Length: 122
Image (cartoon, rainbow, N blue to C red; front, top):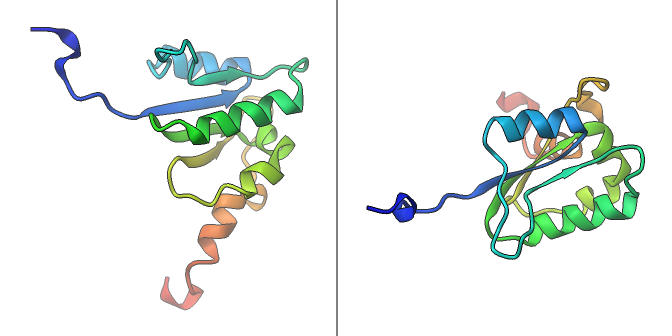
């Protein structure tokens, strides 16, 4: 019986600093598809904003990715691209990094979700 006989699930992708990516990779989320494209991007001070944008756009087009995790400070660099993504899948989740705590007021997806509910309903 082959190990790959199970139905293949969808992936979580990560765009983050080295510590964030290494943590998720150690947790087993790393994957390289048949085209040799990984599901993660390690962003450092030498990474161009255009490279981050291109990676995000590539991830939202891939049909094997259901969730994109992105450090919030990196999401701020490409906010206009993230704001343009209105599809529910892949879901974009902004997460804190070691050096940058999470700020709910900057999370465009959270703001959009709050706008869908009437405060009286909660």
